[in-house]
Length: 259
Image (cartoon, rainbow, N blue to C red; front, top):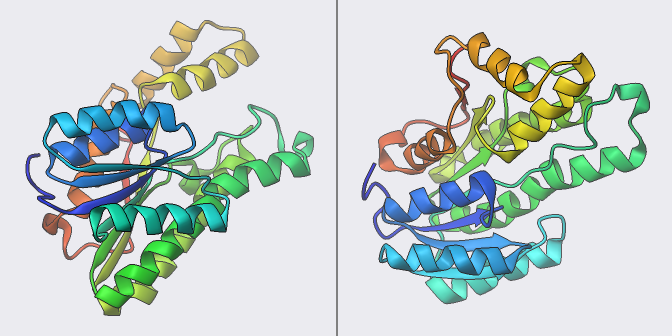
């Protein structure tokens, strides 16, 4: 998908590593200028070199998504650098305290995962909406997950954050639609990468099998008999931010290779 976002300015959280990095590169290749918001500014600066290499402008902003001050500062400084915002992608997230039942979860576990996955999306979304409502245009895409539809044993708190994210995004879409602002969620199933390997290794240990067997089990359970690649998620984000999706808002786009 090329030039679908020509000269648009997109603010990306969780941009420095993992899926956020893949999404940021796809946005730049689609023609967008980027504000890369991350706690790991060293990795974000390395990514910025790749964004510049495809001819796009970029601003790196240190940002703690759980801090009101940090989020507002990153938006203000990013807008000073690139002039405006046309979109927001919330690509950050944490998996929580690992595989354990709800009765073993602690208040600290709850606060960690909810602060990052819910409050940490609410604050950038709120900051973006202030701007988008005033200018009467803008698009927001957050990364949810299929656990936000069906739950997951051993992942009760993480699953709850993804349910909460869907509700927040759908409500924001209803609130902002009259101002020409769209809000959607991309909900991946298993995605190739380090997070999947860590989760699969935990499950393999619990079930007394190997990592390779666990990954094969995940693969064959999907209708397409494959595991999604990070680029599959990035392509969906580019689509939802583009004019090709101008009539789509308040939706959850599930990318899981089929149930």
